Image 1 (spheres, rainbow, N blue to C red):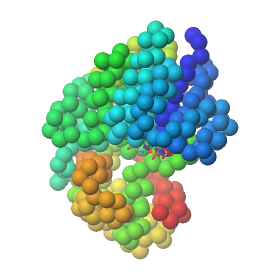
Image 2 (spheres, rainbow, N blue to C red):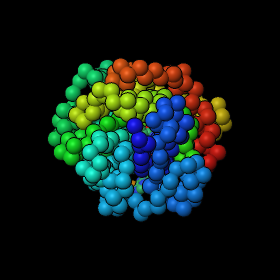
Image 3 (cartoon, helix red, strand yellow):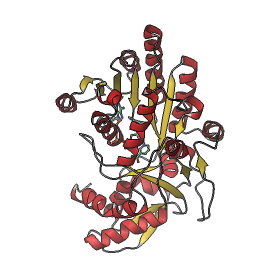
Length: 353
Ligand SMILES: NC(=O)c1ccc[n+]([C@@H]2O[C@H](COP(=O)([O-])OP(=O)(O)OC[C@H]3O[C@@H](n4cnc5c(N)ncnc54)[C@H](OP(=O)(O)O)[C@@H]3O)[C@@H](O)[C@H]2O)c1
């Protein structure tokens, strides 16, 4: 097979940078020998990527959908790990891949990054009791997303559904990796820090006391960034080997390897903060949505509050059966999850965020 052309959006990010790093070092000949292009927003990022054999292209950002479509149309595979809430950007990339397919007659592939806040319960739970666990292989995740979206739209979920629908309409194979809380140091060239646990730590340092969002009663899953990067690599490897890999409505892949409770996560952060001498108390406290946003100087718009409730307080449990059926074998479980809090706390504290 000829050399495949892969376009990255979000290569400077935590997830995108880690996936790109993994692909560049892949033992899979088709992945390793592919040509890599990345759309980025700064000259510094462009220069550094060039040193690593990635062809950079400077662009204005995700709202420049004509540019996204144009560059996607020059590639066989697009990996989009930028802002998962930008529906028009995702659609433009898929339409560009459709243009490519019409020109070459060869299948094109769209690999999208999303998060399990898309399936989070709303309103957030008020008591810790076991609820549902959704399987990517045994449950109809697409139908579940559509049902939730009909009840109360959420931009990330709107994008997930648009990815599947646009892919079907435009004859492009789409794959969504919908991850829970990702943790561990990223391996990319730029941002190496994730979002949620650092978000709790930042608030703890600001307030002097560790908060949990709302009731703290919800449970979520976790996955280590190295295991997640391996899942992307495995998925692409199987796709390029032309194996029968679920795509479109059945191509929504979860990626967990353990789970946690929000209040307990805050308690762990508080204990670590106290041990490190960064906090004077290991007590925790619940914060309402608006206070949760404003205590890190974020605007409490309706959409930001919704994202914070779904992403820091909801119940969202999954099983990554599709990946495991492909022999994905994550190595980092609950012990890694517990152990990562100390280095993460130190990293956030040292940056004085
Ligand atoms: N981390 C997690 O635990 C997790 C789990 C599941 C899903 N997600 C979702 O996955 C996405 C990526 O997460 P991440 O942790 O990798 O975030 P990140 O480190 O902040 O990376 C975001 C990437 O997207 C790019 N980007 C953002 N807005 C852009 C815009 N308007 N135009 C062009 N590029 C833009 C950034 O480029 P610049 O360098 O130019 O800013 C960066 O490359 C997010 O939507 C996040 O909500 C995250």
